[in-house]
Amino acid sequence: MSHHHDHAPCRCAWVDLGKPDYVAYHDEEWGVPVHDDRKLFEFLLLESAQAGLSWYTILRKRGGYRQAFDNFDPEKVARYDDAKAQELLANPGIIRNRLKILAAISNAQHFLDIQQEFGSFDAYIWRFVEGEPIVNAFRQLSECPATSKESDALSKDLKKRGFKFMGSTVCYAHMQATGMVNDHLLDCFRREEILNGKP
Image (cartoon, rainbow, N blue to C red; front, side, top):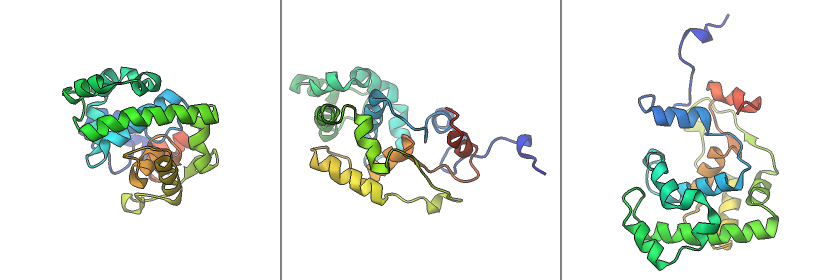
């Protein structure tokens, strides 16, 4: 007999319940398979900015990034020049790291190259999991890896194509966020919802 409905739903242990925006991100986005190129570019840009920082730091600045980077339009970002890079460097709404800002611009250029080659970035990136989410069954956070053989392969390929700030750990986080890997813990209410195709 289950008393599951008596209390708040169980969530992954990393979610800080005191941060409503963090809870919303976990409940609405994290782990949901993404096949939209603009959204994939948004996550790539945000994940690459995160390197060395907490994801929540980036999540809080997401609106700032959306404004600063033309609503995550890779075609526009790919055309940014030095003057625009300087302007971004002075923008308090984003992480003002010169290397990360330059990487966002060059990554956008490589993103467009991949779209040209594969028809979409979606078609390219989902090949690394053979088109289907990898579904893990972890009971606790400590079981979740920081990288996987798939994220190693993705990272290696992205680097070969000129991407920066896309090490295996960043790639794994990207795969988790965009549902290429379902790492919701076994007792998390979102695990089954996503497996059952609930958005």
